[in-house]
Length: 148
Length: 148
Length: 148
Image (cartoon, rainbow over all chains, first blue to last red; front, side, top):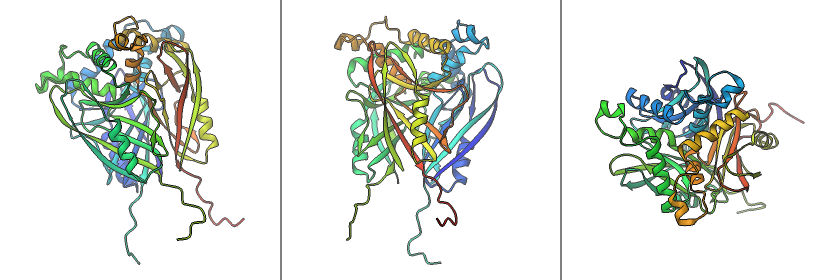
């Protein structure tokens, strides 16, 4: 059983980290699937997905790390060729990854207590993002002995 | 067909890299699924999953890389707010990722010869970790012509 | 429904980035699965998978980022022990990840317009690589009322 949905997320870009946990959980809750995986995927090459403890300190620290390893102030060949100034966003997104798979059981995402699912928009401008939410797994077990 | 299991792994923290390949392979072996994926997921925001050639040199090199890009000696806002001193662990875990999907065929994980599945515990203290092991795929093909 | 296929990819190594989008799309197209996921996996510990806008600028920028965070010129313990000089490749591959999951719907990969699926071969020599392409999902819906 496969269900393909899509979230719409308005972002400010510039590394904004957006908590999409509740939206993902709601898609699982309203599906008929009890146990399985939710595959999350960002179409686009300047955003990524991961999990983090969604509090402003850890979010800031993650952004600082990306600035250390792929600073927006470095020279990027992508910028020389295309002039859109978001070369750092492409590199960061490729490293973080566009895909995330989260298992669930009895309709509950198997996350840790302080662990949230986040989308990071690395682009250098606000975007209207789509996130694919595809749910796959087993439906409810047939009730035993059940004549109507 | 979906099976949700859990491994328990005692770690020393501080970037310890633990080979869980055999445990994952054993869960696949004892399931009824022949071909499919095993979705691995660490509930928690200070550990991650990947594959590596599990020998002490490469393991050390990986730990050094994380110290270069998210040193434990840097200042982290997470530490200022929460005082638990593991801000670097949150950043490293978000970058490495909490999820890993490994395909298998005829109950054999499709890993390379020198490639192991590992959990990296970045936290700054020993932990008792859970790793979700969810197996999804096709059961054995029905035997042809088989009357009972 | 699960189908396990394999691509063969000849690489030059040294961080070469190879676009495998069309090959993956072709496997999905010729399968009987309409909606589901394709799990990609590189057996081996010196290559990884991700998505990127596959143009020479962004590809170069990604390679430069890996040289910044895990330079081939650093000392690696893996090299001291095994003498094959590809310690940086092991570290980079473990960070990028050997696995990638891409959802598809009506046989179309749900990628962004400028987003390609790539394999990065970090090894320090040409390789003949395999990439596992495992397709899982729903077959075509049975036609309603359909007598032949």
